[in-house]
Length: 549
Image (cartoon, rainbow, N blue to C red; front, side):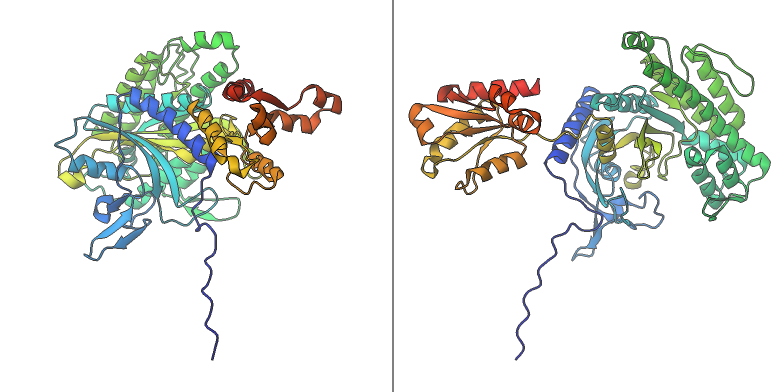
């Protein structure tokens, strides 16, 4: 008779595309999100925690880069036949909430939300199936003042977490302007929006690759196509020269404005600290500032934000010609420009950039993207800009899916993991997390006294714990404290208890001495000292303050 097989042990491994977050990761993320929440709260936004699970009907088919309904989500069917899925972003749940509770919520409804989302996509380097997002949206406000406010709030949030002026830029475009350009270029028919859909998709993807391919690469994709360095050929939109000229003219407006933004960032970055505040107080607007600007067509030289804004708008109006939707988009960009200029957000922080496309199909008006402009080294050691960490725009038709009536909405989403990685690259996060003060156990029978010690420390606001492992080997207790990155260990044996004292071991100083100090230095600066039991809390506070200073 064959022996029964032993139960197969499960593999202790994280599923593909997922990861575990430990102490420092969780703590740093929370600290960053708390700072962002403070900014959102200051702007009058309320928090919302929606369900992690939605019906597939509620999620719809707006998943980025996926055309098929329900593709790319983690879904399952209930016994009653209903299909449910984990949310893939925080916007679709908001649309459902806004429709479901429309009679109870204020109008406009301003909310922010932070939490994990899930996408059933093929994982890869830096691409996970679960990640955090941080969103802020206004539902029920048709005015582009809501879009301008989102851009200003995003700028403030980036600076609040530690991204300096000059190290980021918020880029603003308008899908209406882009649609107007497409109409003039002959790849959008307002009477038949589905016509030229294939060609329009290629044009949009080409525009989105401007930073990577440059003008020549985009131009090639607008025409017959482009062969890359590996020899792979990408099909083009097959536009005529005249059609391609319209699209390239649209992009050059953004290129020229961006050159001025980079110039202003560079100037500010290299000013002495004493002059930076004066620089920030100079008049400036979304597409201007007190600097020279040379327009490609007419060598326009301007030193005022208003003139530069008018120049950019006139260039875009020339491109959209008689397109009704295109001119409406230019009007909206002008309004956003004026509103941001009035609040002091200049081209070193927010600029008009016609190359901003945003891939989601539900955007209907202004779109924006936050890019970090400082350099990092890629996996091959080559310098490159850090890149995008946030994006959003206006989506006036999303709530309509539930109500049948158009409900204006606009918002932004921050990639939490990306932004945290940026802070670490800038040295604003990533330091090892300080552990608790460890009260060691020298005598098992005196556990109540050790618990009393740790209780006093905690009541004083000090993070502390009693060693709860096997206390037989004292060296293991110190190894545990080292692994926990503990700053201090409290030691009290029978002798110390009889004398009413404790030994306080400065583990930070001890590690420093062990690394570099000579014997004489070690003797003159001992890392362990004796203190009266009643002075324990005060001495621990003094040591912690010294280390923080």
